[in-house]
Structure formats: C-alpha cells, structure tokens
Length: 244
Length: 319
Image 1 (cartoon, each protein chain N blue to C red):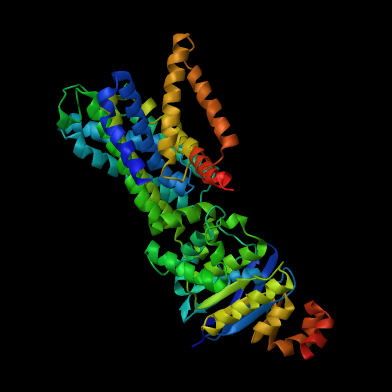
Image 2 (image 1 turned 120 degrees about the vertical axis):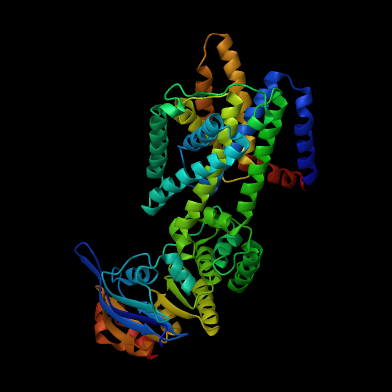
C-alpha cells in the first residue's frame, strides 16, 4: 500500500483551473519533488493535501484513508504536516513555545512537549535561540523554525513549501542536509522548491506541474532533459547541469 | 518572588482591619473587576477572541441565581453555580455560531455585542424578572442567602474569587489548552496545520470564561442588592470588564489584577474629585483618555512593559 495516493484531483478558483485531473502516488520514506513555474498550482496541491482547501473532484488517500472532509488539524494528527511558503511563526512566542505547539500534537503534557521540542530544536540547530521571540529571528532561522515546528508533530509525510526560498547558498545547503537527515529517519518528504540544485539532489522523483496539469514525471536526470519541461520552465542551462 | 507574593497576600488578608468603609468598597471593586477581567482574559487575552459582550454572562448569572433565590429560596451559593452554567450555555451558543462560521476580529466582537443586547432586551420585557425595573433583593443579613451585614465578608469573598480565577486561568495557561489558545491568537491557520483544533479550543475557552463570569454575576447581584437589565447586560459593564486586562496586559496572569489596581482607584479619585466640582461624568473622559494613552504607549499593557523594565535594570548596572 502506498503512503499517499492522489487520484484525479481538481480544484478551480472562479475562472482559473488551479489543479486539473492530477494523479500521483508516494511510497513510504520517499522524497518527491514538485516543481513548476509560478502559478502552476503547487501550493494549491499542498492546500488540498493538508485540508486547507477542499477538492472539487477526485480523491486523496493517506495511508489508505480518504482525507475528504477532514480539517487540517485532523490530517496533522494522521501524520501529514505541511509548512507554509510564507513562514508563519507565532511572533510573540519564544522559539521553544512555537515548537512546543507542534509537539503537543503527540502528547497532552506540557512538560513532555517542552522536552520533545528541545530535542527537535537541537536537531535543527536552533536550541541556542530557544528563548528568543520568534518575531526576532532572521529569515533563515524562521525557515528552520517552520521546519522544526512541523517536525515536532512527528509526521510520516512532511510537505515542505519552499523552505529554501530566499536563503544564501550556505543556508540552503544546511537545510538540504537537514531534510536528508529527516528523510533518513523514515519520514517521507514532498518538496515544493524553486532552488533547482536542492530539489535535484534531494528528490528521488520529480513531478512537473504547469497550468495545474502534470506535464512530466520521473527521476531528476530525466526531468532535466525532458524537452517539455525545459520549454515550460527550466531553461537550457539546466540540461548541462543535470547531465554533468 | 514567592515570598513577595506571600507577603502581598498577607497584607491583603489583614488589610480590612485598617480600612474605612469607603476604601473597603474600593478594594472590593478592585478584586471583583480583576476577577471578571481574568475570566475575560482567558478568551480575549490568551485566545485573542475579543468579546465586548461579557456583561451578558454577568447578567445571566446574576438573574439566574437571584430569581432562584427569590422564587424558590435557593441559596445563591448554589445558584451561583447554576448561574455560571446558564452563562456557560449562552457562551457555548455564541461560540458555536461565531467559531463555526469562522467569525474573526470585528465580526466576532459584533456578535458578542449583539447577543448582550438581545439578552438585555429580552430581560427588559420579562415580567417574572422584573422587566425594565429589575429585581430588588431584600436585605436579611443571612449569610446562607449571600448577605452580610459586615462589608469585610464581601471583601474576603471578592479576594477569594480573584485568587481562584488566577489559579484556574494559571492552570489553563500551563496546560495544552493554554498553549493552543495562544497559538490560535498568534496565527490560527498555522496552529491548525500543527494539529490544533481551533474550533474546539476556542469553544472550550468561551464556555469556561462565560462560566466564571456568570458566577461573578451572583456576587454582583448580592453586593449591589439590585439588578437592572440596562446595567447588568449593558455595554458599559462589558467595557469595564475588558479595560482592566487591556490596561494591565492581556494574555498575562498579572494583567487583569494590575489593570484593576490602576483603573479602579483612578476611577474613584476622578469620580470623587469631579463630582465635588459638579462635573459628574468627567471621570469617564479621564478613563477614555487613559485607555487611549495605554493603547498608544503600551500596546501590550502595563505588565509586559514593567517586566521589560525590570529585566533591563540589572543589565544596566553591570559593567
């Protein structure tokens, strides 16, 4: 049984078909990249998977269970947690309190949640900032906090929405290593990313969306050489990069 | 810190022996409004769901226990809990409607005001509840009927209620529900993504807040010996309730108490001062001005500001 099955899912906003007839699956522990030009419908897919939007048609199965009609918090408890493209820390709460909210999904005890949150912060490399209000963090730190909070809910499948956007090369590399470490523990990752180097090196498989439709799917090297993808999105220079 | 609190408590316990009846009354109102403010704080301060209709819960609680006492001779000590339950039920209805339909910000505020006004109008037209004239409690001095000839009894009851509200809201603050409420206040969607059932959490908060506020209604009725729909359900009372936590620092345990210790004396002094000059009502202008000043200069209230000052002091002294 696959971890995630998306079957013929569609979503329309007024006159805009944001996602049409999208079908794909994910296996346990897989890293899947979701790429495409701006407005291709990637974030809409995340909103559909995480319960922030309801699909007009189609079915989403997570661990064999339909997500139809479930609220975001219920989907989180099933083991599917998303991050937000525009980071949304709880600004007046400390970094530790932020992560604690995520940890409380798995324990009712505030003390236990704080201990779990500290462990996650240590792993993410934010423990030194535990007592700092989240509103005072740099963008790179906020991105890592977003990751830490999601991780504290102990997901089986983690949806990462552009966690590397706006970061320097060194910061991006740190996040790539973090995602790799998270995945090594068996957490499957669905990744929306514009940083091609990162998405190519992390993903086992990539799906390319354009105008809400899947135009290509396959291993990174194949995707980078697909003429449809190059035409829609990537640009000539990546052909050489993927081959090299 | 612990000994400072114990000392403050000791002072408050022996204080009535040194207070005249006027000052005793001032303290009773400080405690009572701190209690109501703390109950509001749970929903509005921690949860960020601003209610401007909390007087409705005072009114429902007050009328319930007073009606039961006058009609069935039920002790207000018991009626207090029934009044609290009735207020909690009303809170549940308001919360269900407001949160199920996703009302946020101004729209939720308007909903709470509307419910308070509806309650006021209904009670104004209910003859068994005294209509617009209200209910008047005859004084018997019977403690079982929540009546005391010595004002010090009211003082200790109000003090006890204030401390109980701190204990209850403090327990919530340290629990999962408290962490969830604050997360909802900060960013509801982000909290949902982290597994927070925002609807259920907000509903629980308004029910508990309404229950505590409704219990306060019994004290209100039996301390004032009368109940009128226009005052017990009125917007001025709702404003009184929310001013203290906002001035003191909403979303903190100390805020409502500090706010009450700031505002009540100020209201009393300005009321006494301006009434003597034949300018009754001017104290409300002073009040309004102070609120504007607080919002402008201490947008998060007096306590967070003071806490910030205290934290900076030792650092300034260090080399």
